[in-house]
Length: 120
Image (tube, rainbow, N blue to C red; front, side, top):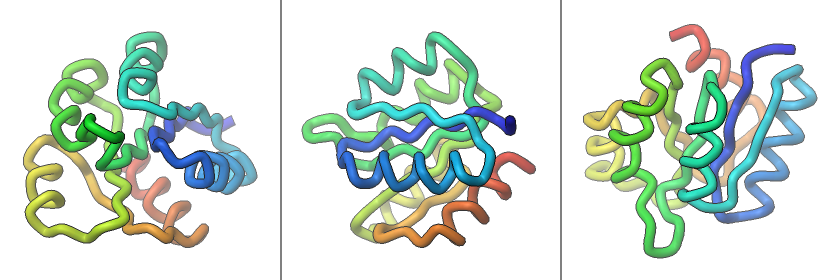
């Protein structure tokens, strides 16, 4: 099996689709439906890549990046967003995010970004 990947998104469809695509490609995949569950999973085990949604209701994924990078400095953080906002993307990169994906996300894009993130 390849590196372990965490998908943190409050949308079940995103979690299940990403999980399916990545699992089929040979990756170990975990999912979190909230930012707090994401943090708990990251405190418990290492991940090679974190796909992190920007919005979790009142929680903001971008604001959590700095703390996540303290927990797991070697984990590549890729932001998932439904709204391409250049300010938010800039802020995410300042905090340590490697890249971003804009919904809807195609299988090829997901696998390409995953490989890129793990190569970094």
